[in-house]
Amino acid sequence: MFKIKLHGGQTREVEEGLYWHTTSHIMAQAVKRLFPNAKLAIGPSIENGFYYDFDVEKPFSEEDLRAIEEEMKKIIKEDLELERFELSREEALKLMEEKEEPYKVELINDLPEGEVISFYKQGDFTDLCRGPHLPTTGSVKAVKLLTSSGAYWRGDEHNKMLQRIYGISFPKASQLDEYLNMLEEAKKRDHRKLGKELDLFFFDETAPGMAYWMPKGFKMMNILIDLWRKEHEKRGYLEFSGPQLNSSELWKTSGHWDHYKEDMFILTDSDGKEQALKPMNCPNAIKIFASKLRSYKDLPLRFNDIDVIHRNEKSGQLNGLFRVRMFRQDDAHNFITEDQIGSEIKDIVEIAKYLYGIFGLDFELTLSTRPDDYMGDIELWNKAEANLREVLDELCGEGQYRINEGDGAFYGPKIDIKMKDCLGREWQMGTVQVDFQLPLRFNLSYIDSNGEKKTPILIHRALFGSFERFIGIITEHFAGAFPVWLAPVQVKVLPISDNQKEYANKVVADLENKGLRVELDDRQEKIGYKIREAQLQKVPYMLILGEKEVEANAVGVRARKEGDIGAMKIEEFISKIEDEVKCFK
Image 1 (cartoon, rainbow, N blue to C red):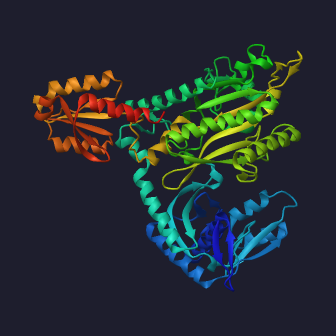
Image 2: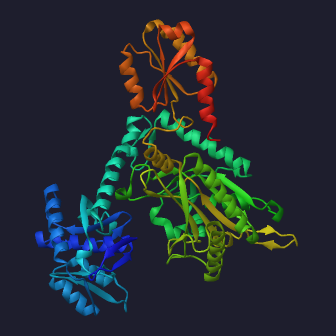
Image 3: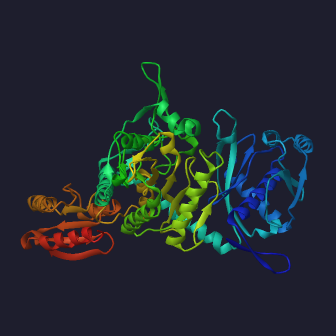
């Protein structure tokens, strides 16, 4: 929430989204003043700021952005009142046609019959908008335009390419400065940049949205997977694997064909039948459950898997490891009875607490409710939402959690896990979804204590979200300086000259025998150069080996954070690093 000052000196709290949406209108007015022939498309608030799409003759330059920003500051100074008014469909179309705004005309034509059509006017500028808005343009105090890029009208690559300008605004200049400093720090931590620099992963045009994992990066991936497997085995989860490709019939039964088809990779097999690469693991987990007769004594029955899944994301939405087309979901599907809902969700949250705690990550829980395109019976939806509210009231305190209206999955409401990193950025991490629908659609059943058939409830849950995305997030969180237990290379051994090569090989063997991840840099380079290289690779420990170390059967230890911490016996160093690796458990 932002606090703004009103005329008369009173203060009022407003949602960030409302603040940023008003700023997008100020930007659109500035663009129209400077580029009268620009055509207006849409200008919403987004998670951090706002954007507006324009149809213009040529892309906006850096000079254009500076001029638009200056014009925005003038409009803010003018303190123009934002006045709402409504028109009939015919009047609205006539107004936008007279203003030669074809995109607004298209939007009006797409509105359902009987929809209220409203506009907002500020000085010489009028825009089609549902609102609401701040009372005046002067309510905005500090603004900065960040970037511009191409964007297809309505996100469809078959439509015209428009120009999108992104911006941010705040009620105080100090808040803007803080945000811009955070952006600069975020650039340094960009996981795509660090992924290449640290030899972890990269992307190539031959496989859009699909990472190439280098040996070091894949080592880190497997360390995470091993941790995940171990913790779930402790808690009675059973790991399975299913097909990558399933018949369209499976996806029609699950409802994904109707609700998710455009995001699936679809192909035709040699028999002419439609198949789809799986975008979700749930139907495969359901098939595992349905493969044999189940009893109430088997429940909860928890199936987890890390199969690769594919989603046909639009190219403009791809974003490093954060938004990809191929990834490994840290998935589980838990089949339970109705009276197990509360205890099962609490157990899942406990796993989340433990896993996030290892990385020093705090999180909060958010309830996402029924979307417009929901599937199934409304009464079951109400029941599922009531169950989740009850659990959240107990875990967080009554009403002490956020609610995202309409943001649930099409088959059930969910609890979303949101985490903040060291820069204060919020990330959508895991999710816990209660599903009454899919067990019914697949006619699942178990035998209850009375010998009768009952339908189980399905809980879909992922905690990291996906291993790819989680690695992207923690790469930025740690700025590539991973904790010792996770670092793909924990120790770099650096002999000063060829005279220490034999001893260096013995040190490497001793460390490897203890299960430590070690690299030897025996190049004929100056030791200062080798140290700088290891430091840039963010290796936690460097062992410097000279004549003194060989004679004393010791190692000169240099830490990534502390620098030179002196000589140690090799056994002493091994004990030190083993303690650090164990401390997260």
